[in-house]
Length: 290
Image (cartoon, rainbow, N blue to C red; front, top):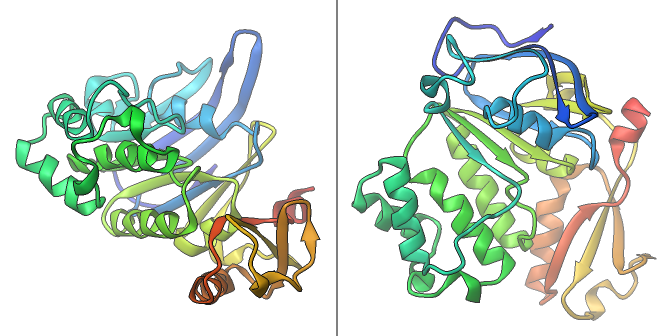
């Protein structure tokens, strides 16, 4: 079993022999690990590896077929265990018939948060200008920001965030990663992604899921790939990237490592390049575990 040592605390997560799936399909197979210290733990893996299934099992939404999930000293299906966690699905699921403020006021009642927390969160997530707009009128990125805002209405010991930066432009994605870093200083944060760049930027530990199994639980700093190639998708053409090689609709650059991505993005934005997406073009996980 993989473990990060510590005593019994409300933020403790323990999986033992976890198996879970849907219908006749078994997605997770004999997953075991223990987490018991504040940090950001990035759950990495390609699409279909079982990341979302793991999050649903940890949140108590998907019952285990075998094995156990324990939060603190309680089984995950107990109300005391669920009350220690915030789970943010990769699906926004926002009530599009409500305005932004109305939606956050609804979430605040569900979370038993104070009305003043709504105003605090509107400011923290820079949603004040959108407060009177219907969610149906918002862009995908704006809806994602509202969805993320609800986890800040009330503090919990554990945060399960399933791909929280998907559909976000690079600037907003950086802001959200900053908020997650803040949470990880005092809370346990599990953050799923298929992006090793994001993992290295904000995570201290990494859990790699491959084919429904835990392939690795280690410190981020121990992950190494021989090449790091980043792809840039633009909102509109720009001469600053005219000499970059192309892969489909992406302009590509080979860098020394993920730590160089923020500098590249800042340099391009300074030159007026409008980025739609920044992503890895070659996944080091294929080298590490292929």
